[in-house]
Image (cartoon, rainbow over all chains, first blue to last red; front, side, top):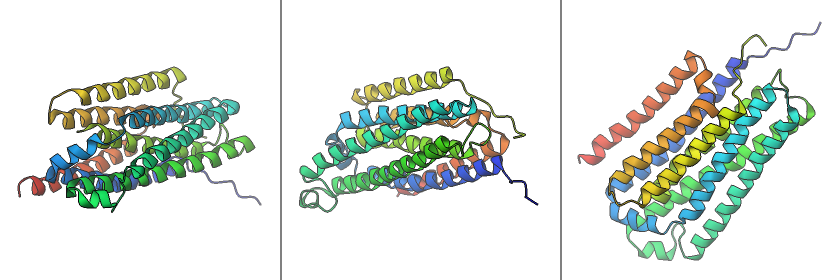
Length: 200
Length: 93
């Protein structure tokens, strides 16, 4: 006798949200570190912030917001049983993730070329606040970049399963959870952008 | 499936996206103004509105039940307590 397959849609989504809250606290801790050091070294932070590439930051913000739009539209498309469009939209999100990471590579290369990286001789010789600013910048943005990589991988797996017909209009919680994860990555960046690129 | 799922139209999602782009332009513009410490609060306020838009529409929170809404409220309240109580210490040392 075959057992009916048990599906708990609300439970799957609740689990995802609980995981997202732990991610929120992970990055929340890093933002708290930023805020307390900003209170201690306001002048050093202002000087360090002037050295950031605001153009890269702005372009990457627009790219991530757009990738979130296509991820959200993919959920609408699967609900309307338009699998072809789901694949295009998820492809758009994954492409945006790749462009984001490529920009990050160019940005970090330029910064490392100028002698700005954790424990570099230039930062070690400079004021302590600047060194803290860039250490936190590399840690926070690096961890965020890792999340972009994980999210893009997750959405690739989801797209593959949509193509295979495992995810369809009647059972799409994996797509919805993948999209939720992607939006969290977007939200984290929405806070990183003003704090590191614009504030000072 | 027994549950009813709300479908958000493409048009609505695109309007939210346009709103997010506008707020991004606004936050860059505000950062060029010479308003001192107002930058910090202005930037954080705009970022919070953007995050709110993403959570409400892209993440479907507007159409979720009471459980998820309260959990989100609780998580944000805990985060605010962490940050607020740390600053009671840091600012008045």
